[in-house]
Amino acid sequence: MTSQNNYLEEPVENGVPLKMWVKGVPVEPGAREQLKNAARLPVVFKHIAAMPDVHVGKGATVGSVIPTIKAIIPAAVGVDIGCGMMACRTTLRAEDLPDNLAPLRKAIEKSIPHGREPGPRDPGAWNRPPSAVDNAWAQLQPEFKAICEDYPKLEKTNNYTHLGTLGTGNHFIEVCLDETGFVWFMLHSGSRGVGNAIGTLFINLAKEDAIRNDVHLPDQNLAYLEEGSHYFGDYVRAVNWAQKFARMNREVMMQRVIGATREIITKPFETHVEAVNCHHNYVQKEHHFGADVFVTRKGAVSAKAGELGIIPGSMGACSYIVRGKGNPESFTSCSHGAGRVMSRTAAKKAFTLADHKAATAGVECRKDEAVIDETPQAYKNIDAVMQAQQDLVEVVHTLKQVVCVKG
Image 1 (cartoon, helix red, strand yellow):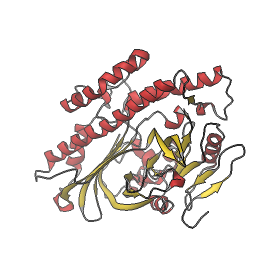
Image 2: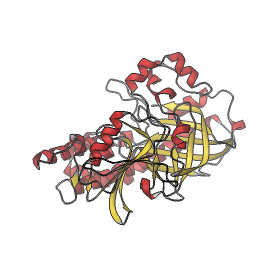
Image 3: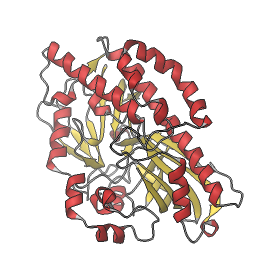
């Protein structure tokens, strides 16, 4: 450990070291094992950076930054390709909000498809997409059509009908107040059904490639595609497209949130006074330590010097707009949130509806059995997470939600 940096370095036998920003936050043994497995891959460059919100994921650890040379690990990018956050500050102030926030929550819920239920009619997809979706899809459709020519299965996914929709699980839309009383809108979503299909397809193709080429892996989910291999170029094209879809998905939803708010609050207001739209599940080519590498951030945000990012808390905790410090040791990255401290199943067993209501007091949100797996206590303490990464980011704004819409 050094005075300038806040990380703990851990050597890995037959692999690159781990640099972990985890002082003062719990790390489950399974997450350490996953990180070590990834560190043993021959394509990993320099070291792996683990963020303070690190926890077990499918194949690769959530809250990890994995740099690779001339190869990408599809499972490290994951299936929610381009998942990320968008936030914008408005000219509205706390006193402009109605005393009863339930109509505002209902207006947002009505404006944006969310959730999922068994049966043919998916409430999380558009029945009749609005013009904003049509306009965004027109920009995405030509490239998608070209991808589908090579992979026709992708055509039969939820693509157009999921653009501008929220999803399920930890995806959310919030109305927040900052430290000076200004109103912000913030949301969290990714590439939805089509991104899931793209991710799953190429994870399986990478596994098949590894078996065909007799590549011995510490975990089959860490199968990688190398530059020049049959599927590598196709994956890069598809993943870049899914990341564009995710960014546009958030932009369309943000416009719908603003529209829904104008229905409830008649006072004129401006939006996008400050706005941030950032991925936290993605891969892109970057230059680090003198080399061009593919940097995969799975549950991590780019934090170059001066770059703005978003680190959300849980349903009852603060979120942060941050400015990156450009720390090279983390491959200029920071955490993407608080990070789960227990699985969804464990959370449902550990907490009651009364616990959830107490933890979300003062927030206009769902207070039912179906969201207990997202209750604040299922997550790490966001203050401890922020403390552990002081050398990665500085806080620009502290946001506290007053309305939360869950998928």
